[in-house]
Length: 417
Picture 1 (tube, one colour):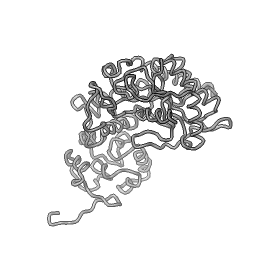
Picture 2 (cartoon, helix red, strand yellow):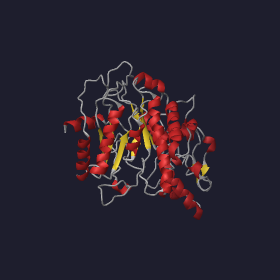
Picture 3 (spheres, one colour):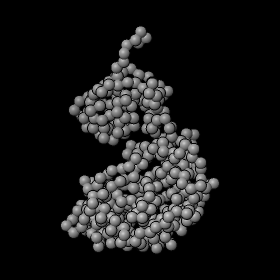
């Protein structure tokens, strides 16, 4: 229990944690499954998935990263699990319905190879001795033998390698024991093996699956002076060149007294982290490019409004769009219209023209969308297509237009109405 308290607490700063992407069902030989119905998908306020047992294998570390609570020079309680202890915790917690899977990360104990070998032993015992068929997300240790990375990938559903910091210069400054090459090497190996495994599966159906849920990574935000433009450009490159499923952004929490770390009088940059996640969503699902959202002249996101709305008010020459004629790509660029509602619009308008009431039933957030759309050539009500006016209405409670439950706006008449 002491180890669990220490190593579960030590894992709380790792946000690269998800429980989706695998489709392996249950079988008569093992316990658990990874189909969507078998996972709780329950997330804590800071984004951590609470359906997974989230622990470090060890918080003992040979590295001295300035931002890390578990760095070598810190005087903190240390502990290490054995493979059997991790197996026992996972199985007993699963049987009690506390968890649906395991998220296992680790500090570097003695060497990357030594640590990765222990992790592989743990996964092997879970899968082959305890017959655990549930979801497992494991961290690959940069610098470990590629054979160990390969072995872990056939035992885990998802693997991740933390990028740590957005640029090589920042990594050199705050994590001198790490380098970008040693981090990108296992990323590339995992990507190539996933691709080769998919090709093999098309030929041989019973081929073991390698990282069926793909790979992800994490960047610490706010510890170094990179702009949002630099951070999102790195993320875009990772998606394009390494086929990552997710890039996670972790607002820097200053847990060490170190002159190289920035002072954060306002606390962790949580709103900035939120804006980065919103922009990341636009890259992955809405067809945006980083250069559309940010530029060298505007390198940081507007903290007042979300990136999609910010893009829209800076491109008012494109709006308003006619909801009954606009193509799918343009619908996705309207604030208040998401992927599902855009698909519903495309499908429903085949049978007739849509009105604002129809849009509301489809899940369109009219409070944001009404400034940018028309139905049959008419806006929801006369409004200005001006940047300042729209931004005020989206952000200022006093200026914001008031709506009733039916989505329509009403107001008390006055002498000046």
